[in-house]
Every structure is written in structure tokens, then in C-alpha cells.
Image 1 (cartoon, rainbow, N blue to C red):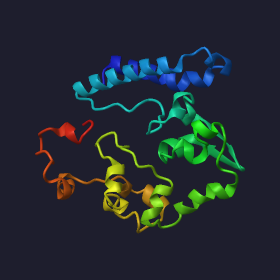
Image 2 (cartoon, rainbow, N blue to C red; image 1 turned 60 degrees about the vertical axis):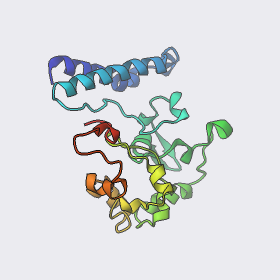
Image 3 (cartoon, helix red, strand yellow; image 1 turned 180 degrees about the vertical axis):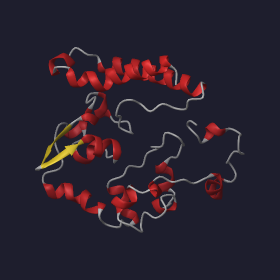
Image 4 (cartoon, one colour; image 1 turned 90 degrees about the vertical axis):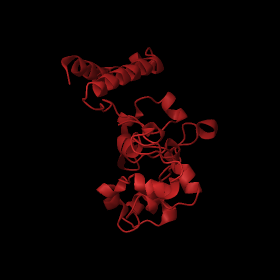
Length: 221
């Protein structure tokens, strides 16, 4: 990557990762977070486009970001970096929100009815999810923690439509019902590596030919 791209990428990291840790909380009141975020997001997209056009490949965002949209995130900006105590344990939002993709409302009350409340009342409530990490899950257990959204940044895959059609998670996440969930999540099998032929078993009538209309399924390359 050229020096200009390196400079731009480092500036993004400075604004979103370094500076927030050096700002007094009173200073944050005077920052229009949505406006600043939109400027930085546009700068990231421009740098990413330039990088791919020059053959360097896509850039990773230099900041943590929840892999879903939620009303909570419009105000609680930067929550992905926060860690706090919970029933004698450390609760890192990065692990739960970014890595595990757990929705805010799994632990917190909904904005419309119980904003600011904590749904979890004891360590036993935490264990209702954590205990499953060491267990071999059944098909119906997946949705107790996971959400049905199009989470991939590479392929358009509407989870909800496929689940509503009756497809089990193990059809794509092969092996999920054969090992402890923590081991499966850390294995390469957790992210499906299925090709055109696999999708074509059901979508043979609307699957584009190789090299034709790639963006129908692929978000980026």
C-alpha cells in the first residue's frame, strides 16, 4: 500500500481508537458523534475503494464495530471498547458484542419499555449462555444466543429466510452438533466454506453462471 493510504488509515485509527481514551468524558458532550462517524466511515470507504483498485485488497476497519444494526448503538457509541463488572466477573463488550454477536437486548432492557435496565439478575443468568459453550448443542439451542441476520460482509445470506424455510443450522455450519460449542466456534468449521455447487442444490434456477452477475450474491471480493 502506498504512503498516502498508510497515512489515511493511521489517521482513522487515531480518531477512533486512540483519541477516545484520552478525552475527558465532559469533552464528549461537545462531540457530534453521528456526524464524526459518518465522515470517518466515508473516509474508510474511499480508502478501501482506492486500495482495492490498486490491487492491494480490502482494508480492515481500524476500529471495533458491532456486526449488526441496533437503536442502542446510535447513542452508545464506542460501547464495543468498554469493559465493566458483572456479578463478580469482568464483562468485555468486545467479546460479547463484536466476537459473539450477542444483541444488546439479550442482557439489557429494550429502549421502548425498559431502557437502562439490566435483564440479567445473577451469575446464574450469565451461566444460562456460558454453560452451553462446553455442551454439544441441539439444533433448537442455537437461537438462544445467536441472531438471524445477514452477518457476512462477503456474501449476501439471509439467515432468517433460510431458517424460516426449515433448514437446520448444521446444513451450512457442518459439525456444530458434533462437538462442544466452544471448540466448534474456535475451529475453522464455524465459518462455512461452501461453494456454488452447494448453493445450487436449492438455487439451481437462479444461481448465476461463474463470472456473471457476481454481485447478486457477493458483497465484495
